[in-house]
Length: 160
Image (cartoon, rainbow, N blue to C red; front, side, top):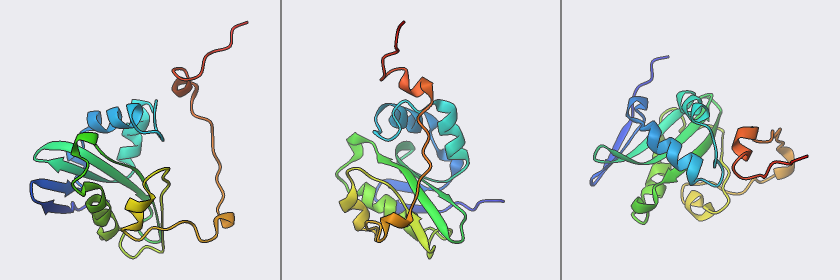
């Protein structure tokens, strides 16, 4: 499928869905080192997740300063994940603007359901229409432990 690129501009910032603009070093570094939900994520996992998603890069000129991705069937459902704005770029409303662009994207606008998970950004997501699950008991998860390589830096190994 050939993907058309969407782009939004505000002041000196740009949000683009052009996968060729994504700076994988910025995304990998933030996710694997800073993001509580992805610390230790391996580079090949980040690369595959970006390749398999509708991506949104936030740019100050040519420098990438934020990111989000949507895993979607483009018909009924999307999972919004790996949303971040680098710490030095926060405080200018870029996170809310990024999410406004995500929910307004032609492939996502009007979907029956969008989901995301957050530990601490509920107020940001409420600004663009997200709320807590109305019936959480209807949702289920199949969760695997992180690969041992992720845990190697945070969990001491047993010795015999």
